[in-house]
Image (cartoon, rainbow, N blue to C red; front, side, top):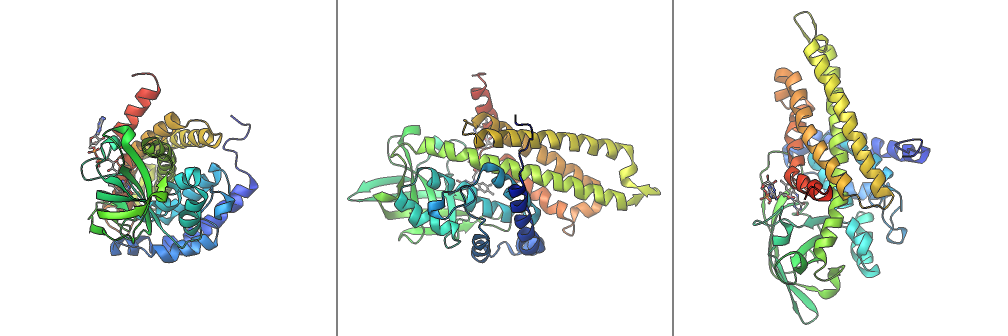
Length: 384
Ligand SMILES: Cc1cc2nc3c(=O)[nH]c(=O)nc-3n(C[C@H](O)[C@H](O)[C@H](O)COP(=O)(O)OP(=O)(O)OC[C@H]3O[C@@H](n4cnc5c(N)ncnc54)[C@H](O)[C@@H]3O)c2cc1C
């Protein structure tokens, strides 16, 4: 571990400040109204973020990216979380860190020009389409097919829960191009103006309500074979590679959210009185928060350890899975305890904790469930 860990530099801090300013001015004021509306002005805001250089942090400069390291992404996620709206943060991170890094990594120069550069410029929005009505955790079981016909792929099938799905310009899409199982899957870049594509229901969700999670249908959709991303039938490995970044940003978001909820609760507890004293003076709560602060810091450090591993180009699977597992699980307890500490006020929408309580519930499910994380950890630790 380097002498200074995490290795924040002055440049990281300057970058952090610009994300904080943007978040506080442009996102946080709408934390309630966008949640109530069930949508947010993604296209408009992405254009503004592009103008600030926030949409291509780690991506190649040839595509218009900044070519920076994972610590910049860490600062980005931590400050973005101050939007206090899990749906908006999720929508942004799908575009910047879940649907697009794999294009930067394995896309052809033409694919980067057509798909990645416009995302970085705020002109296109991306979604990631893996989950189907019949399978989520078991990615190897996907059934959406891409059959070769002339110079095209003809795509048939359905996806579900797709974040940004109703307004994305393209989808980084998992399809079956070969036999059943892991080695018959490919990734393609799928433009959503392709004839035969349709958006089904926007699912009515418990949390992350500002952004849609949509059902998508593919009915004889024809895309050119040059939209194949990476190796044909090598998609499973590409998806697993991509998952590492996706899970890591989810863990970073969870950690930043916990810190914010605890600080909010401490502030509340200094003001709110019961039985003649601030409720934070009750020992049961003092100990509760001492415990939560300790665990949240340990969890954050595990997240930073995963960032350090991925930043050095090592295989981050074990560290990322552990960081996602711990952060997603601890986030449930932090949200529960912080809501409880607010008493009745915790149950009403005026306080951010009610929305956070709903939003964090996704963390043990999305991008790979906690049970799946444990399976990976067991396998990678040699447990079997
Ligand atoms: C709000 C939201 C947004 C989402 N956004 C996207 C998106 O943008 N793109 C996308 O592709 N997907 C997205 N998803 C889907 C998400 O990734 C899946 O829901 C998740 O991977 C779990 O899959 P599943 O829902 O099919 O559950 P299942 O796989 O059916 O799992 C059900 C239960 O069985 C358990 N289980 C499964 N396998 C095992 C095992 N081997 N051992 C032990 N337990 C097991 C699971 O842990 C879970 O508890 C989103 C989901 C939600 C709710």
